[in-house]
Image 1 (cartoon, rainbow, N blue to C red):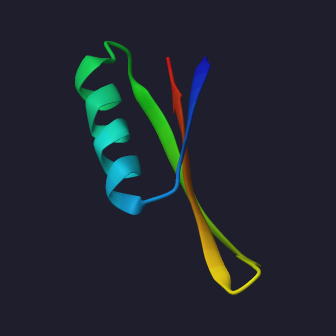
Image 2: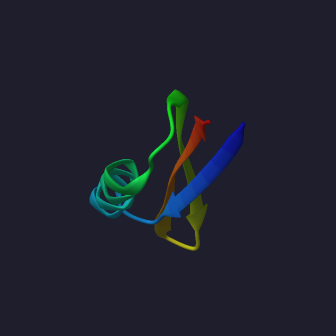
Length: 56
């Protein structure tokens, strides 16, 4: 079993990276975990979009 972790600042970048990986992986996808985190730095909101793909 293997994992691949993605971390992007924009949801479309995460979508693109995950889709590219899914198109290249030759094994079976077991699960995909998705998470969004947000924090405030000064007056700016900082987003973190992440996904973990578990595959064989």
